[in-house]
Image (tube, rainbow, N blue to C red):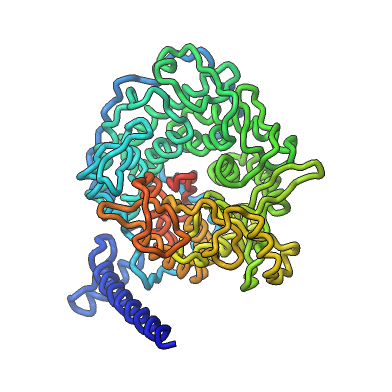
Length: 603
């Protein structure tokens, strides 16, 4: 008991120190952020005038003025090869054209959907680790795809086109880091998409990181040079559809693509690869007025639409598809996580992006998916606290029908936010409720482990009844004994954490962000803060932040891998920052975020 009291006193002292530091940082933040109105030392009348003036403009307005006025003279340097000049042997079939937004405009929201829920009050400083990571990247890996956060060196794994810079552009803008944004943008518009450090380019990654990053940076900053660079890359990616059946290749062979003679579609790819091109290519068409990009992506989604209700589990697509045969039907294994995740994610988001000119049937596709996901994938885990939460699992088709595999992966943690967003967009309160229970399940998974961080993969025991689930320790013990990956130090209720890593992933905080924006409940901000402290404490290195090899044991410093994906800056830190920002900063009435958290303006 004496040891317990000492531990509690020591914890209280640490908490008091942390709170004291947070107060100091908060006071500095309120004074130092340049677009926020500062306290006036002049007369009360001028104070009153200043207060009236500041109340008439939102934080978004002040941020936009700070970042864009005056606008930096940014000039794009053309790449060494013009992909738009290639004469393609095959051109994608022309889809039904939609009315696109005029380039260079900032259109009003398409009928406010009430995403401004939440308070402008923020009792905590906003996480801003991005400004701490950038100096290390500038000094040690400038122009490279990634920074190795332990070795302090650069690495290229996405063609050598400065993935970290492109991916983090809009994050820098949103955080109000004007000098850093201008410096990064100047480097980005000089990237040469005519050559790469590898002969083959991954279409999926280039689309979500590079094209998405360029489009979003343009949408928030209106720098024409960024849109010009997006067009260069868009023309390269358009060449992925230069195939006999108009379906895109998974990897572009750059030498073959230069000839325009045509590419050969791979036989088997994960469904998310061809299914996650629509948002970016549609936005590029909206901004340029050239429908060819939208047409190419729409032809792919037409294949998915026609096959959605013909799979072994109608409503969802299998993990692997054969685009060379336009076959998205065959397959026995189904998941909502990696391999298929962003295909489902883009259904309501495409509905939102096209809302001003027809939905394209994406709302119906989401409804079909949501019904099956709720019935077959979502389950209530049996927990000693009997918390009423949900987690997503996987499904395999057996002789008698779907069989649930109650393994949850971090990549599937976006589903809470997706259902909350879709519920608001499609006026379905039941979707919001599902998103709420899922997100609280992800928060619980974070809290349950000793480090406060959820591992990459874990498993629990599914309840037989989602409405009434009593804790049965005997059942849990028998389930864990049947799992060869179970370890004695795992929390009660968990049967394995067979992949104990944390890879700096954003999906859980992404859902927390959406749930706070949709519901306005402070519990989600509280959860976000706990998650931020845990992640920051567990991943920090001398230079930046690194993936962790095992988050199931609180043995600090945690064992790390010399690995920091660009999505740490593009997504994870952005969502942590936005959940503590006023709701008009990247308002969900005005913006739709791609799967890499790049915000596209909604026409």
